[in-house]
Amino acid sequence: MKKFNQNVIDVIGNTPIVRLNKVAANVESDIYVKLEYMNPGGSIKERIAKHIIEQAIERGDLKPGGTIVEGTSGNTGVGLAMYAAVHGYKCVFVLPDKQSIEKINNLRAFGAKVVVTPTNVEPDDPRSYYSVAKRIAETTPNSFYANQYYNLDNQEAHIRSTGPEIFDQTGGDFDVFMCGVGTGGTISGTGKYLKSVMPELKVVGVDIEGSILAPFWRTGEVVEAHGYVLEGIGEDIFPDNLDFSVIDDFVMIEDKESFVMTRRLLTEEGIYAGGSSGAAVVGAIRYAESLDTPKKILVILPDSGNRYTGKIYNDQWMRDGGYIDSPYNMTVGEMLHHTGKATKLIKLQDDKNIGHAIEIMKANDISQLPVFKGDSLVGYVSESKLATPLFEGTIDLNDNINLVMSNDYEVVSLKTPLQTIQNQLMLGKTIFVSDDDGNIVSIVTFTDIVGYIAGA
Image (cartoon, rainbow, N blue to C red):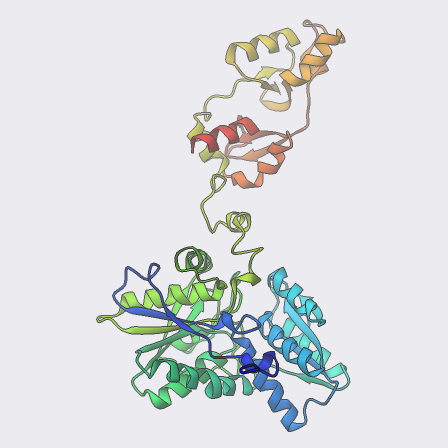
């Protein structure tokens, strides 16, 4: 055979660079992206996995038949698992529970053992994925802890691989290098190499709101981390692989704009990448908008979109998170206002008879009628619950309404998000709405929701 490789590890790297066209049409700078998801395992992390393991073998830290242990957001794990599959090692990976199910399933498909830990705990908490991975490595015989955050072979992999590859592909014909920042290996290693051959190059990191990295670079102060949904960017620790001296600037982004851009990359550019890629592109566009003169900007797109089919590429997940518009992304009060139903509630006192209730429903063209005792809601009657006993003759029009009244209902406020009650309504639950003073002011039915959506 004329051209082939010995195994899949040999084809890591040499990923293409393409120009963005539609999504970056409104900026004067040219934005180029390096498609790291075209590595055989779908991410840039295969570069560091290969180098970390090879260095561990060379130093004698990883012996034949040993177990590789790592705390990972999923991509490094796939790279390590791929190498382990080819060379006969076992793997144990620890992931925080915010990682996509696709990442977890990918690792298990390689035969790895996967431990899932809580996301919202402090880094030094014994339940954190950092702590659990370290503990597993310490208690597993013949194991090697890859430790991508503090093992400088991570950074070295990019000095030896990613940086030279980019320079060879571009001839140094660009002005700004950008990527998301997590462990710091990509930006520090690639940035160091590129600056050694391109002294005028600017290296710009992309960080997410809630991370402590960019705020520390700007102020020198350690802020309190808070939660975010994006995977692969941002940290609540300072990894040894992150060399702040390499970085010339930071751009901060948020979850929603990152996810929306990720989907645009697919629908407008044909680029099937993950959420951190969308984040990096948002950051690049924002940085380009801040420039006085157009520049050539090169951006790393770290991983594949096939890891996020249940999240970013799932319309329902995006709607539930408020990341894309939905008819349900409003309050109950706003929906009632739009449908013109935010009017005085028609109601019945509990001393009235069934015939009176039917007359009120007929006169007002309504199918449900709340029943009050004084100012307090005690139940409701509906056409559907009246029909059968009337036909069967088990009730009379002169009977008190309490004989057919139902108390199977819920009360929500005008400020309740509509999406929180949609399932109850679809199941036929009756929902009453109260104002800020606790007064019942309206009733919501599934018909109201359907009518609103149809007219939206």
